[in-house]
Amino acid sequence: MKKYKTLLSIFIVYIILNMVIFPDIFIKETLSGISAWAFNVLPSVLPFIFFTKILSSLGGIEKASRLFARPMNRFYKAPALSSYVFLMSIISGYPVGAKMTADLYVSGKISRSDAFKMTSFCSTSGPMFIIGAVGIGMLHSATAGYIIFLSHVIGSFLNGFLYRKIKVQELPVSPINQKEIKNDLSQIVIDSALSIISVGVIIAIFFVVIRSLTPVFSLFPAPVASVLEGVVEITKGCIDIAKNIPFRLAIIASTFVISFGGISTMLQSLTMLGQIKMPAPLFLLQKFTHAILATIISFILILFI
Image (cartoon, rainbow, N blue to C red; front, side, top):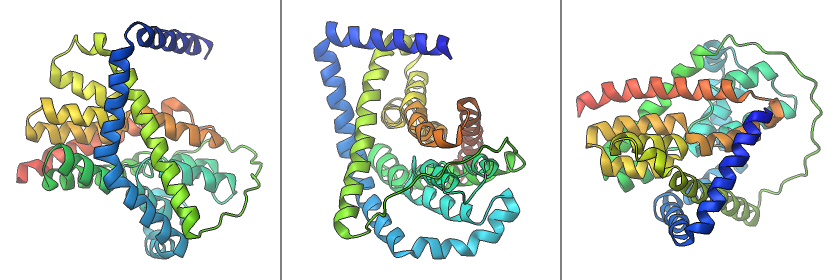
């Protein structure tokens, strides 16, 4: 762990030095990240977060998820509540599934083993980002968006089978005293704004990180470099994939990076999963197998367009 912290510290110092030496370049890159968030993510994701929170406060989604409780228990050997988390993850996108899984564990409603199973299929992107931002906004095709989303969801569903028998050491849980949250309109507006702003900050920061890695990415052809960028930050990667890769292959490549999640999204999720002491290598493996499965499915689906 100490070795990794040293390497990370060196890399951060490298980024800071680059920002000091080339301030104009990195200011421009930060603005590009903010622009990508403002024009590709914000319009499609913000309204969806807002209305999803309203629906959740009314209990509509939770009631509907009961219909899927038995299949989830049978397929994944996971508790009934996993169906609710699965649906919310699909609807809301990263990192809602991870947050809800951790909250259920801390509240004592699921075991640590249940949580580890759930992260394999309850960590997904949402339809408004995939269909709206990537499909329509970047690839200029709603069909492409639907193919990516369908591949992503089916891949997640299948991925859960790979980890359904996982068992880990249970740890004592100290429930956190949570303040009662008012589900009035003003609170929903504030929560929605904070959520979308947090996403924007992460995107902008990782645009800077990707720029710092340009000397490494430049060693590869543009299509490969675009995918590597997506492995770091999915929004930036998808933008460049749409520019540098032919349409059909761009669908497949976008499916891979979105299902993998990107390091930026993984860090968000792992921060929330810290409460269950989720090992980073295991979560990385879960996202990698999800990406592989979804990519295979997208390859099959594009044969029909």
